[in-house]
Length: 243
Ligand code: NAD
Image (cartoon, rainbow, N blue to C red):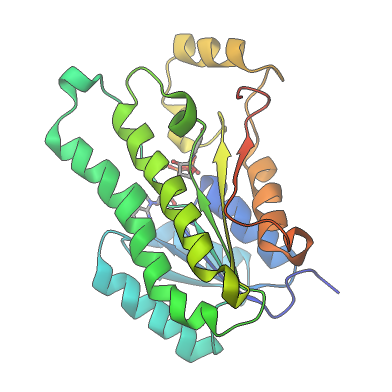
C-alpha cells in the first residue's frame, strides 16, 4: 500500500521548487494533497498534473486567509494528518543595508507564516493519529552567511519554534521536525551570480547542489511512521556542508 494512502497532507509554497517536489512525492504515495501558495497559475498546473489534488491561493502572512483555507480542508476531508511548512523567501543584503521592509518581510513569511499555518492546523492535527509536521529551515540558520543575517534569523526562529512545539504536542503522539537544506537548485537560487554559485559549490563536500527531490525524500521520511521515534530534530540535508 502506498505510504500516505488516504492521508490528508497540506504543503505550503507548493507551486514550485521544494514544495512542488514534496507535493508530487506525497501524491505518488497516495496522499490527498492540498497545496497552498500565492501563484494561482502554478496552482492550477498543480491541480492539472495531480488530478484530485487541490490548490488554495493563500498568502501565509495573512492569518485570516490561512485560517479559512485550513477550515475548508478540515470540512472537506475531515482532518489534517501531515503539514509541510515550506513557503519562504530570501532578501539578501548586508546588515548595514538591510531595509526594515525586507527584514519585516523575511520574518512575516518565513517565521510568522509558519506560525499562522501551524497554529491554524494544530487542533485538527491533534485529533488525528500519527500526525506530523515538517518545517523547512536552512543550513544558513546554523552557519550564518554574509548578506543573509535576516534570512538566517527567520530560519533559526523556525527551528526554535518547532523544537518547543515538538515538546508541547509529544504526549498526544504528534511529531514536529525541521529540515535544513543546503544549496538546492530552485528558482530561489537561480538568481545567484555564477561567481556566488561557484563559491557555494566549492564549499559543498559532495560538490553539487541538491535536487529538490532529495529534500522531498527526507521530508517524506520525517512525516512518515518510519520516523516514529524522531521529533524535535533539525535534520541537515546539505551535501556535507555542515556541521
Ligand atoms: P522557491 O522560491 O522556488 O519557492 C518558494 C515557494 O514559497 C513558492 O511556491 C512561493 O510561491 C511560496 N511563497 C513565498 N512567499 C509566500 C507567501 N507569503 N505565502 C504563500 N506562499 C509563499 O524556493 P525553494 O528553493 O523551493 O524554497 C522552499 C523553502 O526552502 C523555503 O522556505 C526556502 O527558504 C527553503 N530553502 C531553500 C534553499 C535553496 O537553496 N533553494 C536552501 C535552504 C532552504
